[in-house]
Image (tube, rainbow, N blue to C red; front, side, top):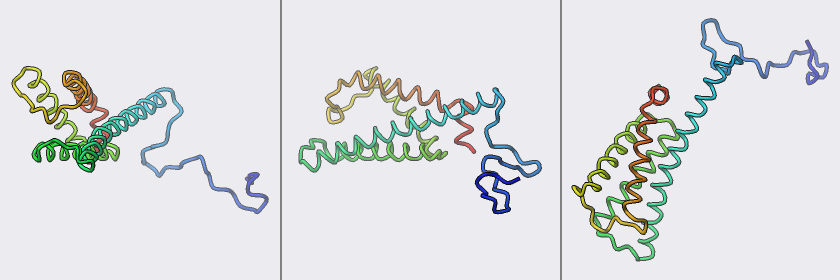
Length: 172
């Protein structure tokens, strides 16, 4: 059958919108049934949420790195070397984890779960006055507010990443 775009050349155009599958091969195309459409929408929502988590991690690490290096360039850094090293290392790790999450890397998934757990534990210990940080890590935002937001964010990340559907995405 000749289509309008074959312009009478005597050949059949390729099937642009139809996917043929070999015998026994799984279909990966979107199905038109309501149940599979809902499943595909849910999968898309998971991917979107994972991308948001990755972007947040990059923003946390990236802004910290920019601020730290900016203070070094302006000679306004008051942090001792060991604190500066910790801040740069933590910010770099956060940025790299974010990039790995955007690439759906299993190691980034595992590291984000681990570091989120460490952050929650450290913030709880800070609230209980078991762990005290020197003033070098404090920012202009009140520490109680940043610690609370950090606990909520990291607990949400852990709960979300531990869902079966999310684990399957990173363990393929």
